[in-house]
Amino acid sequence: MAFVSPVSGVGLINPEQHGLHPKGYSSSFHFSCIKFGDSKRHTKNSRCSMVVRSSDANPDIDFSDPDWKQQYQEEFEKRFSLPHLNDLFDINPIQTTFALKCRGSDETEPGERKNGYVNDDDRTLLKVIKFASPNSAGAECIDPDCSWVEQWIHRAGPRKKIYYEPGAVKAGIVTCGGLCPGLNDVIRQIVFTLDIYGVKNIVGIPFGYRGFFDKSLSEIPLSRQVVQNINLAGGSLLGVSRGSASTGEIVDSIQARRIDMLFILGGNGTHAGAHAIHEECRKRKLKVSVVCVPKTIDNDILLMDKTFGFDTAVEEAQRAINSAYIEAHSAYHGIGLVKLMGRSSGFIAMHASLSSGQIDVCLIPEVPFNLEGPYGVLKHLEQLIQTKGSAVVCVAEGAGQNLLETSNATDASGNIVLGDIGVHIQQKIKTHFKGIGVHADVKYIDPTYMIRAIRANASDAILCTVLGQNAVHGAFAGFSGITVGLCNTHYVYLPIPEVITSPRCVNPNSRMWHRCLTSTGQPDFL
Ligand SMILES: Nc1ncnc2c1ncn2[C@@H]1O[C@H](COP(=O)(O)OP(=O)(O)O)[C@@H](O)[C@H]1O
Ligand SMILES: O=P(O)(O)OC[C@H]1O[C@](O)(COP(=O)(O)O)[C@@H](O)[C@@H]1O
Ligand SMILES: [Mg+2]
Image (cartoon, rainbow, N blue to C red; front, side, top):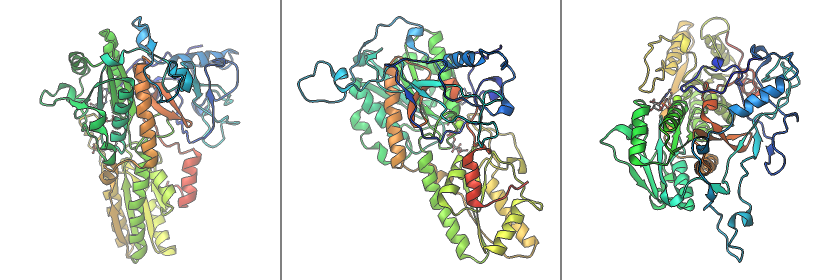
């Protein structure tokens, strides 16, 4: 049986190149599935989950082989094993300096006393639904029978033993890509947690990867005092940027600055860059821990319940939707149109539509649609105007790109520059209603940058706090080339390549998209 080896390449990798990679994962399930390392680890034959739609079942796996499942699990375990400094070096770990504050007589064993440490063998389940049939809504299956296959991933948190002497550590933090609510909260928690371990030399690299090689930019000294209140504002204290990343130059700079731990906040592109940095550090035999914190307002990182900033974006998007609704509702034949972010994934549009309850039509990149024709969006709007007197449309920026002129232009990071679907739909609606001689009052709202620049809401602030803390615990535990995340309500460490094989997308066959359709009442537009 041919199993695909663990991903070794870097970049936004085509999922089809990695035969066993689960596709269309949607993880809004809530279940308690941690497996504790102090009890027995990795029971290979006990039952639990795994997934890929049966139609996508991997042709490289011989499902008639009675051992396929065991081999799959072994392969999975390898793929999700975490790169560690001791893969390369022979470092003797020391007792951790991290402890929860405690008063009392038993000061000598802080770790034992609070029992606050995570065992290296603790695991959490990646998938928690057992689909009885490949036809179940949202089913993701490995094999045509949709068998239950356990997939355990590494639990995040502080370890008893650490691989760095905190007093000697220099830690760097960098924020890359576009803005996202919560960046400052994560920076703040990374600094606080490093400080608790005893790290005093902490610096921020300004303006993303650019800060590593642009000689006009100097590092920003960070301390508990400097970051104390930064969470009260949106944006990033350190600044962000796209483009111009040369791995060699970045690692030269890491070496010259004598950075031991690098915390990188960013999305898919940033993670690809971080993985390249991690590999280059290994090649040069540098004892550097590279740990990422996924940052994307689009929520398009694989395997995670959600990324920080997404919740805030959805909440803020509702304000725009509400305004569009009021405008549309108050006008004679009013049509409100709101464009939300989401380059390749419609999560913000879908969730904002669901939460507002005011949307009649939600359009996302994952679901094709026609504007014209008897089943198109325009005809549906015509009916809504006739029956309800008004309508509200929510469109994700990456939706319906096939309906626009394409330019092949890319931004500095290589991301395709999208056509403005919001403006296009606005014009089409106006022309359509004029053409049929029906009055329509169209109000278009594009709140995208207003949404991205605000500070994190309460739920995101908690997520940022936990992710920031776990990033530091991961580095002290000696891991490198990893990212932190929330999977099935538990915090985990994942090897970077596993989360960037492709952007995470809304599964049109998922219950969540079906719920959205139920809520809007929209038909398909094909
Ligand atoms: N495949 C890649 N390999 C290395 N670096 C990359 C890659 N893609 C993007 N980057 C770098 O990562 C940074 C952020 O990427 P970008 O796509 O703009 O944002 P995000 O990380 O939010 O997706 C940029 O500096 C960019 O040059
Ligand atoms: O105008 P910018 O800064 O390039 O950002 C626009 C992009 O930023 C995003 O909000 C998030 O993208 P990143 O995750 O790459 O930062 C996209 O939805 C949007 O296309
Ligand atoms: Mg990106």
